[in-house]
Amino acid sequence: TGPEIGQHGSKKDFECTDCDDGLSCPFSSTLQKLRDGESELGKDYVPHVLAGYYTPVEDPLSVYRCEPAYLCPPGPPGICLGGLQGTPCAICPNGQFFADDQCKDCAAASVLWPMGIVVVLGGSFLFYYIGNMKVSAQASPIKVGTMAIGITLNVMQTLALMGMMTVEWPVEMESTSSGLQFMVLDVQLVGGQCFLGANAIGRYTA
Image 1: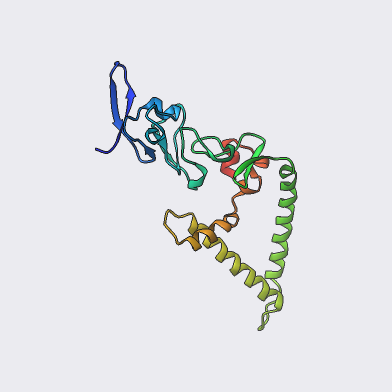
Image 2: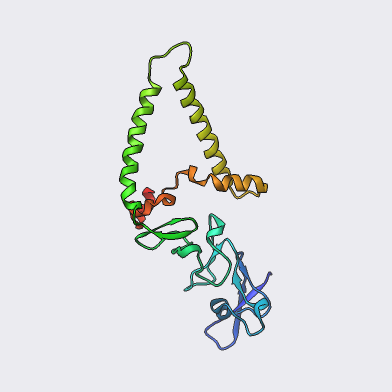
């Protein structure tokens, strides 16, 4: 068996349980030390949750994997990046949205969303009109430009999705994919929670 962590049972003595993936359990680890985030033996003997994993405060031995991993920093149970809440570090509090690695107040985002919807619908009609113009033997400059933009957007979106896979990519690939995450159309990055709400229906719609 692997490392174990002690926890209080119904008896006065300790009972041991396996230390699951996502937990660091050095010598003399206990459930209370995991909750407290400290040990009388020093910081090298403090059990903690590893980066990329989350455990609820009320049940520290239930380990969840975070995607993306950076949303769950290492430390005691219940730690999330930038004020995120839920299991595992899934949403911001009501009236806030996640941007630039932290939860921010909605403010202008709730007003810009209806405007954005109008712009997207208008752009859709425009591209439909351009794409259904009279067919000719030679593509017009407008159609060539439209096709080039479409291919470029598809490549950028593919690179962003590849970066979300659980594969170890070269540093150059990871940095490129990280910078293109807005291409996966995650509406939470642009304040979608402000317009759709943080309830289950709103999150499913997003």
